[in-house]
Length: 574
Image (cartoon, one colour):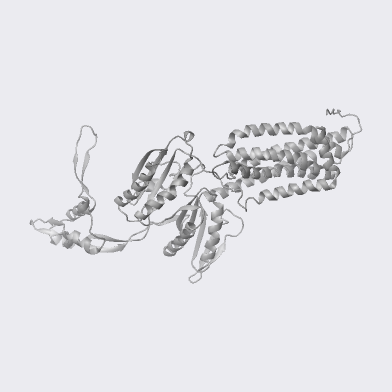
């Protein structure tokens, strides 16, 4: 320890070396912070989690038949069957899969239309599989979309992974609020186009029904009565011709309930030759009903054909009409695509609208307020999804971190009765952030996927504040004792304290590093492990080099020797 004592004393004794230590520390701190804007270290709430299952959502254009949806789903399944890690696949046509963790907020239980399907994919156990599920999804997504999407233009195929944190509607959600539904749809389409062109975003979709033309078959009650038919007859043949219907029931000793017998025409009989009105009129003319006099009456004589627009679903949130535009991230943080897309949106919408940002730093600070330059109508683009949860989490953890700093500072002020000494301890603790950020940068070299700075990393950093504070307290208390009870000069006391306490500080650091090494490989808590390991290493260097410089420059550390002789002596073994 004598060499370390000499090194520290040599640094403290020369102003140029002290200045060098301060400058290098400041450069290291700001250099680590610059790793965020330069994207050397990426922030995300939680990283991808390797699971034993994932889902594929297939949404064909509104109004598509169940046969078309099945064709698209079969194309996806054919690709999945080629994967040796896929154990089994289950298709749910015109409905969602039984509720899982991801489907809780994605509306899987509400799917009841022919143009949707969900595919559940079960994989081999993740502990016996080399490729994580999120990397498999990343690899399969472009291949499947390239092969299947051309089969039915307008189809959307989304790959849904089980979230490692709170389930959300999507990674990035843009809520488009406004009272004019037509303009809301137009704005949503533009937003979806911008998100589709943003690097890092995939599976972009607009959660709104498409407006399409359809034909209503309206029974004419007056004509039906004059023709000697009944409305029930007309309804039955319409259901039979286009859908099918239950015509009888069967009893069975193996079933406690009656078994319905469903009659449906062949596919060729139900299908129309084309989508024109003439084809539908020809179909109705070919269907005849026998009236009470035994005469055959064409169905087209008693049914009125009317072309109308479909009624789209209208969504509300907090009593405001809105449309959701969703997107998933392709193994990137949500923040960076958000900022890029938001900048493009501001530039694009400025042509027709007055664009205003959300005032102040709030939960909704990325929101955009649009005012139509011609009509004065107001619209709101509100960001939500996992991105919003990430912002809220980092905000809350940041608040917890600031609260921890304030409480530690107040306790130290009460203990030392000095703001300067409390500031030294606090500053030394805060600089462990250098190690946390650099540690994530280094960890990214040894992982096949991006190693994000996550919410668990911030939890580790908050925990480090107490560890780093302890290191500084050891030095300050010991140096104070040396000056008061042994009459040592200030610089010599600081050097001796640093050299003497280096061993317990190092042993504590080794214990933390070994204990945290078990967490470093975990997909969710890996950030916590890396933060504790790298932050502890940085805290050791800051405590033994930077904190002594601050102590030497502080007048609050000028303790006078105690001369009353009533204090215990302290023995120092070198």
